[in-house]
Length: 344
Image 1 (cartoon, rainbow, N blue to C red):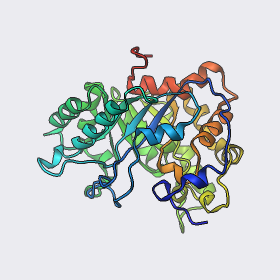
Image 2: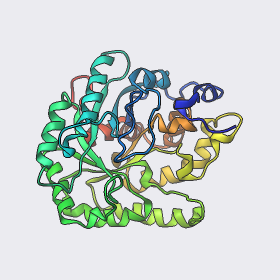
Image 3: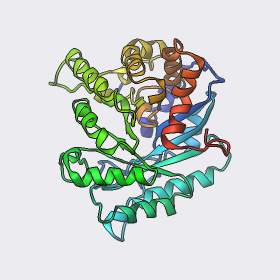
Image 4: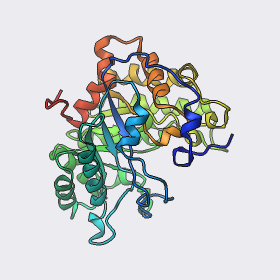
């Protein structure tokens, strides 16, 4: 079977492996997902591709099924950028789009609780203006910025070494906003050196810190060893938290699940990922780790219920309070989310 992706009819294949939720009562905040509208994805300055069918809140709600997802966080993916106006404000169109989708969804499924948007953080001359625009567009949902520290989508550069970038990250923290870092495992030590320079800003590492496996690159054991050193380097810095997910990104992590006749079940996912996930939790603590779906990107290989069942099986060894942190509490605290009208 050839991987088709959610935009090309993957739903039938995903449905071939059906599971009931392992822990249907556990409150979940999906700390990382995307949306896009047909014809709007993606911003050519930051992402390749385009012309994918829509993936909107109704699609996400259908995928969620019967797990107790009480809310979610949208993370930028280059959708619905403004086509005119100042370049530094074009990404505000994405915030407008997501806030409108959240409004239209109204009570029809788990609400979007936060929006992580895009900005060129090193542009400190206009950053306040950009943040104000995201706040105005976000209808109370804007919580932070994601940018790739290698400058992906903009001229490639080492942003973590630039004073302007550091100053921009500090500006985020001063205003109560977070920074999502999408970086590779080889950059984790550099992030650890950077973290105390912006101690008032919450830094959120996406997708397990990306222990990527590339064709022709280091073998898994070598990657894992360097990645573990990077995760350990983050341990002393309490302003750094980690998202646990992205585990369906086959090209990044070297699986071939989408090439199989049937999608994997949760036991297969546990076998592949339990060591890395528990290492992160045991190293950083449950109060600095949160689970994410990275849907619909991870839908290329994993069903939503299968993924969360795998997370729940992996987390079963931890106490109820620790599991509450992993599945919802850490996300609430990191992003300062409000659930049922209360910041809990």
